[in-house]
Length: 83
Image (cartoon, rainbow, N blue to C red; front, side, top):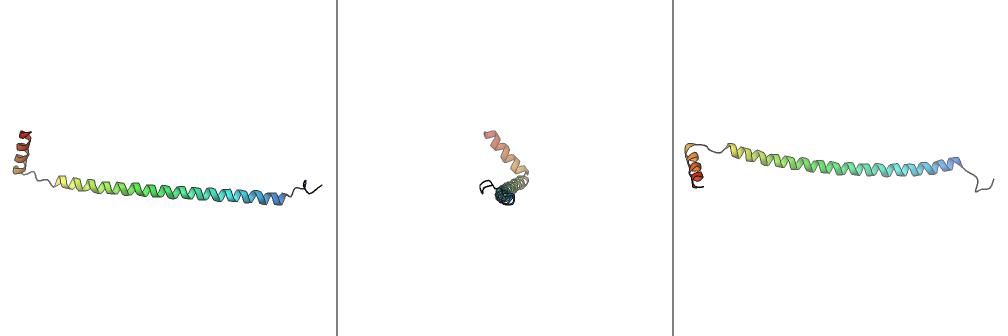
């Protein structure tokens, strides 16, 4: 057999395993980057929801603190009559 026709199984396995390892490492890095991006996006959504909750809580407390005493009700009725 000539050198061109010789087939070294061990050498071919090394080449294939190197290519497979490189591909696996690239896939792993890509997956990790996607996970990091998703984590950042989830954190942003959570922070937005917390801020909105704080705003809602403040609005609710402001609403509950409205004084519905007799003079306040009279003022509101007067305003409504004008409209």
